[in-house]
Length: 483
Image (cartoon, rainbow, N blue to C red; front, side):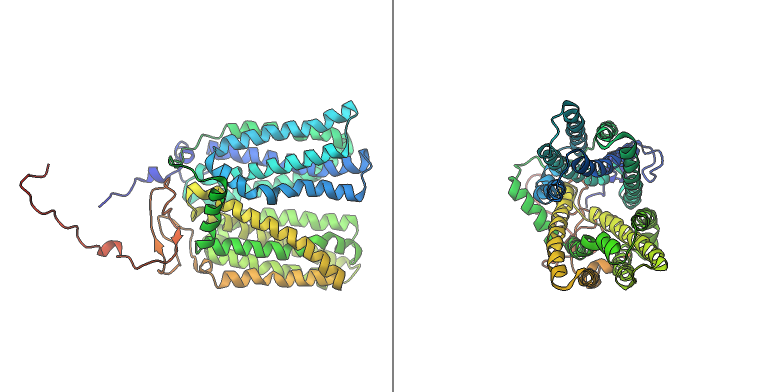
C-alpha cells in the first residue's frame, strides 16, 4: 500500500512559507496579490471613465464612434479568452501578471503623450481600447487561476471572498474617484494616474512568491488541441459542466436586463441622474456585502445550497424594476434596496462557485477551465445584447426586461437537477461531500493534474472499493531468493 503524502506536500508553496498554512493573516504572498489586484482594478475603473470623456469632449466623437470605442474594449474577451487559458496554464502566472501590467502602463501613457504632441485621434483611442482589452483578458486569466497556487486548499474560499470584497471596493473607488479626478485634473491627465496604478500593480505582482506547480514535461498539444482539452474537461465533468452552463444561462438572461437597465430607469421611470447614482451605488454596496458573507453562508448551508440561494434570489430581486410606477420616490428606495440584495446574492453565489470550480479542477487545467467559462459568458452577453434589441423593437423595453427576468429562472432549474445542489461542503481530501457514489473519485498527487481531490470522473466500469481490494498474490518461488 502506498503511503499518503504528508500534509505539507498538499500545501501550495505560497502557504507553506508563511508559517501557519491555515491563516491568511500575515500571508505575504496573498497580501501582495490582493493589494496589486485592487490597485489595478482602480486604474481600470479610472480609464473606463476617462476614455469616453476624452472621446466625447476632447475629440468631439459621434455616438457611433463612442460605441465603436466601447466595442473595441469588449471584443478581445470573446476572441482571446480560450487562447489566454492555454497561455496561463503553460506560462508562469506571476510573470504574466507583471508583463501585462507593464504593457498596460505603456499603452495608457500613449494617450497623454499624444495629447501633449497634438496627435491624439479616435483611431488611436480605438487601438488603445483594443490593446487594453486584450491585456486585461490575459491578466485576469492568470490572476484568477493563481489563487489556488498561493493559499492552502482549506483557505481557498476565504481567499476568494477577500479578493471579491477588495475588487468591489476598488471598483467603487475607481468609478467615483475617477469621476472626481476627471473634473479636477481633466480626463487626459487622469490617465497618468492610471498608468501609475499599473506600475504599482506590477511591483506588487513581482512580490508574489514563485509557484512550484509541476507542469507536464511531455510533448505539448497544439493551441487548438489544448483548448479542446479544457472545453472537453468542462463538458464531461459532473460538477464543472452545470457550474459553467448555469453561469452562461445567467449571463444571457442578465445581459438582456442590463442592456436596458439604466435606460429604463431614466426614460420610463423618470429617475434623475442622482437617483441612478443611488441605485448604482447600492449595487456596489451589495457586491461588497455578498463577498464578505460568502464564506459564512457556505459554512452554514453548504456550497450547493449557497449557490442555489444566490441564483434563486436574483430574479426575485429584479421584480421591483418591472413593477415600479413612474416618478415614485418610495419605489426608488425599494429599487435601490432590491439592487443591493440582488448583488449581494450574485456575489455570494459567484464567489462560492469560483471556489468550488477551483477545488474540483486539476491544477494543470485551472486557467483553461476558467477561460472556457469566460468565453461562453462573453458570447452569451453578446447574444443577449442583440436579443434585447430585437425584443425591444417588437414589444418594447419593458417586455425585454420581463423576458430577461423570466429567463433568470432557467439557471435555478439547472442547478436544482444537477449534483451541485447536493454538495454539503467544499471538496477536501479527495471526496465531494453530499454527492452519492456513482462516479469514480480518484485521488492523486496535487501537482499531477489527475485525480485532483474532489474531481469527479465520468461514470465508468465498476471498480473494487479501496478497502475490499484482493490481497496481492505472492510471487511463485523460484530458484533464486528475492533480494
